[in-house]
Amino acid sequence: SQQGEEDPQALSIQEGENATMNCSYKTSINNLQWYRQNSGRGLVHLILIRSNEREKHSGRLRVTLDTSKKSSSLLITASRAADTASYFCATDGRGTGGFKTIFGAGTRLFVKA
Amino acid sequence: SQTIHQWPATLVQPVGSPLSLECTVEGTSNPNLYWYRQAAGRGLQLLFYSVGIGQISSEVPQNLSASRPQDRQFILSSKKLLLSDSGFYLCAWSGSGGYNEQFFGPGTRLTVL
Image 1 (tube, rainbow over the protein chains, first blue to last red):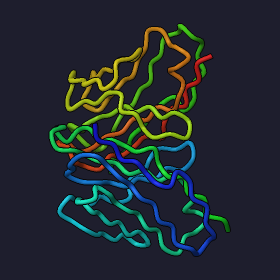
Image 2 (image 1 turned 90 degrees about the vertical axis):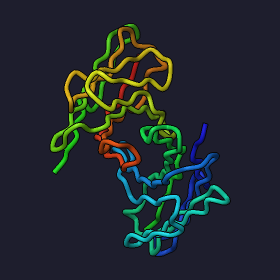
Image 3 (image 1 turned 90 degrees about the horizontal axis):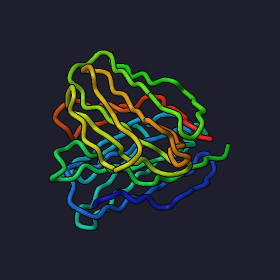
């Protein structure tokens, strides 16, 4: 089965630095999404990139998608302490009816003030 | 605007006791509904999803069951809890048709002793 796998598992940076998280998956996708989760809370949708898109921006977030390598990256520029959270990629694959979103294990980001 | 509610927020139950977690959505109709479980520091495991009243798809054989008695109500149940049922349970909804972003509830922290 397909699954997004994030890399690194954990990342610690200083406030103001950029944070890059990567996601790899196994099978063809229709779209890939990134979510954020603060500790003990529900997930919040950040951005969705479709399989025919290569790059997407939203505020300080930049997502890239390389379908030939089956990988995506999430870049957070000029990080802030409030960006401390876990970040998950999620994929919807062809043949699943669009209802099965598979989440990776996540990257835990810690931004030090 | 749409909102999603989950309760209770935390629950401590003895092994062998029954379970009922409820999730309701407001402000939308005919949503797709999902139940996930998240182990500590891990990603999300899809347990059940539903595309309509009375329609439940199970992803993982287990000690749990789900029901959708009304369009915007999704219930997760167990007749006898196991220690391994402990975890963080998240309900989510998305627009009908699949391939849409999901909106998560605040989660229920279940501890089985």
